[in-house]
Image (cartoon, rainbow, N blue to C red):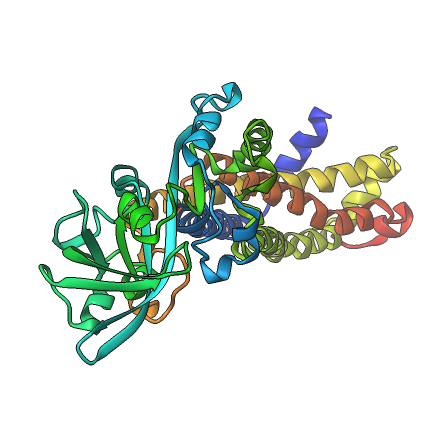
Length: 416
């Protein structure tokens, strides 16, 4: 086998320009694949992070009634004893060290007004200490401060602008409570946030969960408990374990425990994008490696006399085919290695600086930050290297087979 590799290397060195062209072609393809993989990985992580921290958590526990009517944000479909559920989650030994936080949430819609200005909005309530880091609005406050006590609220910058509200103003909230009665309460605006997520900045305000429970008269109940994991890819397993743990609680038959991929439409969308981009990588690799097929075809035609002599000396078809496959594989390995390294370096640069699409996403409410950072992933680069090499070998089969099936006598009559 070593002699086949030695001959392949010698033949590759025969025409350096042609070899450089083939290697550069596959290197460019693998570099683009690696960079695209890092960029897409960063976009998907951006989406998953925002979907889970803002809406679903990695695992979400709700009542079955809330799940059925979720789009209406019903405040009468509640988990009655959320502290018992959180305690049950904390007691699961398999999740020890894998859960970052489990927290209560209440959300409700309302119509806000200030003078002759009116706008539909929704309130987000959770534990202020937990949500400061989880939802991330504390670091997004651009005027005033974050929540510290009862009766306070922070409001999205665009919502505040549309309503003409500022720090120190009173926000009057009117909505239907859990007892179906009309509820009214004033909250003092202590902060204005700009998160970069249009849906939050244009429509949301945050209040403490204790205020929301009292305001809505939920008797301590909440609509949902969200669980955030250190690794979102463990959500399915964590959901199964949590589902088993809460079965021992009173009223557990009325609870729904689901991982984030099974909630709403975004989980399916992300799964579809992962599959779609997987196919795109392979297509790009074939486009880049196709030049190897053309080069080996020319090589076969140029070396017909040599192939005929090798066959006359006793070379079997499989050895001739192996020789040309080795040449294609060597060029593929060289190009794929160079491309994977260059692509990884590009990912490293843009994982720090990122791409700012703020100007193009001003009107979108899609749950992503406007600045995208590429993902620096060595395993992903290794996968692109393997794809590049595999595709290079595949596209080398046709010219290699043509060389192997040549008639020795006819080939020797050819002029080199």
